[in-house]
View 1: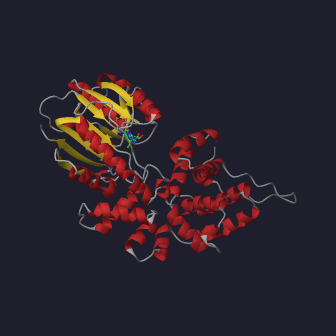
View 2: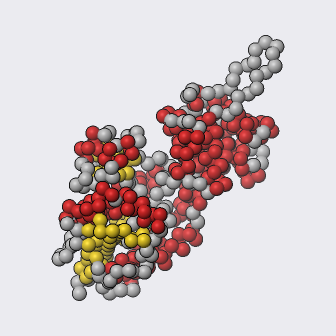
View 3: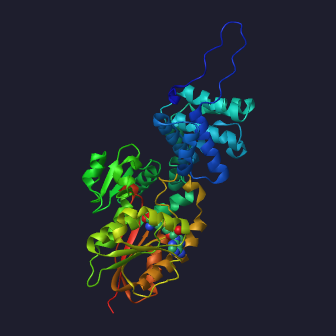
Length: 460
Ligand SMILES: C[S@@+](CC[C@H](N)C(=O)[O-])C[C@H]1O[C@@H](n2cnc3c(N)ncnc32)[C@H](O)[C@@H]1O
């Protein structure tokens, strides 16, 4: 197929013959548009839907890469684009038909953030709207995108940016204002040298597609094996490599479950549990919220090397099945997978030597992975999870033996579900000490913004 970036308007029709019918929109834009529609109407997840849509349109290689960037980038940055589109249209964005707005956002992303020549970005979007919505909206689209193309992105941001710091950051980096406020509060707690610079860097990191990270599960795969398959060691985790490109599942170690795709932050959480010093028995570990099982697989590989075993618990059946499947290569370190509510122990108090609580959370530390997530979450949802997080941590502490270690983790830096959960649970018990906490950040550590706290139950 022709490179979609180069596709422009068809040439003028020849002689006195009637004009040729305009070609339908090109498959790349149609594929991106399909994903946008399903994300808006059906609550679809971009990452899950994209592979299906790419298959439907027969797109692969560079075309698939183009569509992935077009749709993911557009959804991430739609907050910024809507303000610009509103400034270029003859009506407020809220009064633009949703189907047309989707196409305008796709056009704006090509004009302002991808290297698509303006004429191609505009004409292909106009074709898209003509073929999917109609002639009138196509004219409107043409007029709006011509105005959008008058300035580069940084100039639009300067022209339209509000004066208040967080409102400006929300517009410039396309995040809801409440998310900016919440992330800024968490960042401020780490006392950055220059808050404004750090906030900018954090929000910008949320808009960059994350690199694919692999883990070489110890005893099952080696770093060298993954380096030979094209991985670059990151130097931050002993088991991590970064994959420049290609399909990770085509790497034999990944296909066999001896290695896996896993963010470095997640690797560090699992390794923090395994690395905490322990006096006495060290035989049985618990992963209380295990699905889909990435950390269980790493823990089971480490446990097997030490003659210990991991029990994985997960409330949802289908996610418990994913744990069982994802740990097949590390079975020597796995005692079993339980499907159960982690707040209702089915084991005796003090059964385990180490316990991981990778709690269900807002996921605000992993926004770069899920393009639509920032637009779907609400501040209320964050608060609603707090009682469950506290309950799970309390169960974990009851499940660990005196002297044993609990790691409480979230893929969120939000204080309400990190520091405040730990503080609240510690305030209610006199048998636990907090040994250390760590907050990772995409702009500082290149990982998701994982938080973890290492707690120890006092010796009896
Ligand atoms: C952040 S995810 C865990 C990710 C996992 N540790 C990994 O690395 O692949 C949280 C998990 O907790 C599960 N969960 C939610 N409520 C739970 C509960 N009450 N008991 C046990 N698991 C629960 C969710 O279904 C979800 O799979």
